[in-house]
Amino acid sequence: MNTHSTAEQLSTREIQALDSAHFIHPFTDHGDLATRGARVITRSDGIYIWDSEGEKLLDAMSGLWCVNAGYGRKALAEAAYEQMMTLPFYNSFFQTTNVPAVKLATRLAALAPKVGDRSFEHVFFSSSGSESNDSNVRMVRRYWDLLGQPQRKVIISRHNAYHGSTMAGASLGGMSGMHAQGDLPIPNITHIGQPYFFEDGKPGETADAFGVRAAGWLEDKILEVGPDKVAAFIAEPIQGAGGVIIPPATYWPEIQRIVDKYGILLISDEVICAFGRLGHWFAYERFGYKPDLVTFAKAVTSGYIPLGGVMVGNRVAKVLIEQGGEFNHGYTYSGHPVACAVALANLDIMEAEQLPQRVRGEMGDYFAKRFLALKDHPLVGDAETCGFVAGLVLVKNKQTKQRFNPDDAVGMICRGHCFRNGLIMRAVGDRMIIAPPLTMTHADIDELLRLIHQALDLTQADLHQKGLI
Ligand code: PMP
Image 1 (cartoon, protein in one colour):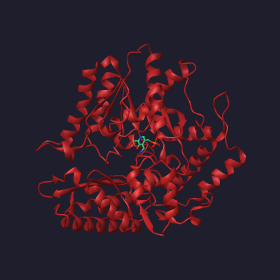
Image 2: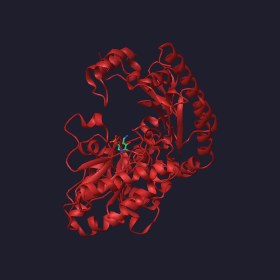
Image 3: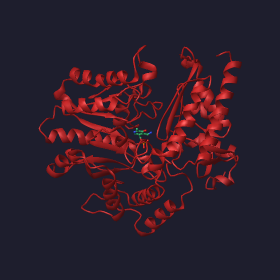
Image 4: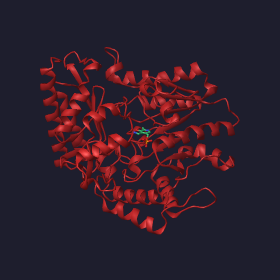
């Protein structure tokens, strides 16, 4: 078989056979994949993708939470082409720099709100969210070393958090399935509970009271570890991969109070939530807290090319950059000129089309109104949105909120119905989640909700037939 052919020249079966023979996919059971064959995605436009059989799917996950500006953006392809023809690569190690990286760092610093020593004037670049969180671990440790407190090594994170798949990223994350493979977490990373009110709220407890209680687990952990040993707390503004867990309004202010009380650094992992997803350039603006470090990736280029990084707040930058001498850390692709040029063109689009403003304005309200109406569906125990992120939980009994047995894999059943009927919606256990492109119109939102309703109805009929409801 001529494997140099394009996808169009190979049949779907041929591609699937080559895929199984050679391509190791992320987070995939390959035995299972070999029996069904991967769905081959071949092209895209706007909010839609198509597979090799010509089936059209509304991509309500924006790829993997990243295609915020939607597919088919010629300006991004042109920016990459121009930059590749001018300077496709040069490193930024040996006292050299490149114009797109300088411009992007300057622009990102300008986009971040100015709040004293929590302002952001510096940016470190990587190629992904995972690498950026590895960089965070190194920066945080270096910071405390430079301040003469090398014993401050412990980073506190949360169960069910996702911070990437490298050794440090997976350790910072709180996914037990990941920890179980390869002796993770690495030392000096520890976890507290997540603020999941639907699951952990006590009978009669308000969401606000729960938010304060859940934040209090951080203080308990700091006292358990020893306040002088804690370096930082890392958290996603909203837990994305964990199933779109949106904290109660009281959670973040209480977290801020606690990190301030003990002087520990706050890392906001905004790999999903930045760049308009929650209606702001950076998600901490939405919740009003003040991080020292902000992890970003994904939508900085709308996923058109890999790029990630860390916004380094002035409190850390002052020590690390102004007093620290050489920091022995960096990647070949830190400040890659093509990735940075694409990011600049992407930010141009987001600014021109006011994508963050759309999300926090009328379009976001319309999306929330339509999505929250799903609470009336017999299978839905709860539904929540924040900006253009939304999640619902499938329940066996709506009145008692009785959950399904995890072995019933209801989320996967529902996802199957979505997939077969033109919709990409993700399942996390019994939670169904979406994060659509920020370009959605009213008509797109209507179509999205029609597809979700259809999938829920089909799931309900299926579960009935299986005797599960
Ligand atoms: N942090 C968060 C919050 C994420 O959602 C992700 C990816 N989904 C990562 C880090 C890791 O990013 P990457 O896959 O680019 O390494």
